[in-house]
Amino acid sequence: MISINEFKRVEMRVGRVVHAERLKGSDKLLKLRVRFGEVEKQVLTGLAEYYSPDHFIGRLFVFVTNLETRKIRGEVSEAMLLTAVESEQKIVPVVPESEVAEGTVIM
Image (tube, rainbow, N blue to C red; front, top):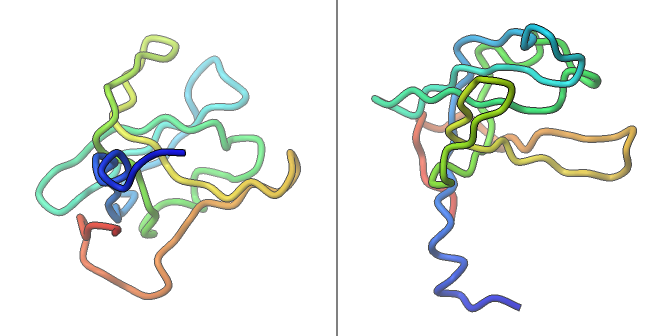
């Protein structure tokens, strides 16, 4: 169990994917460019087996935005896309129910 204060340290925001492509040399990774209002971040996600890059472009998703950056295959990932994982075959990115502003905080 974690306390509510620990949970409050996790910053989740809505971001709009403005660019998506397969990461060269990887069958699993996608490289996303995500806009959170005035700020853009690069996000790597292991969903290339499930979704094409086009699935993400222009759409809103929920991200954890205050994780330490991580270098994967020479590329930096600055946030984490949240997904619902039902099984290895069914992984679904979390999306807001309706249109909200880029950068909106998730509570």
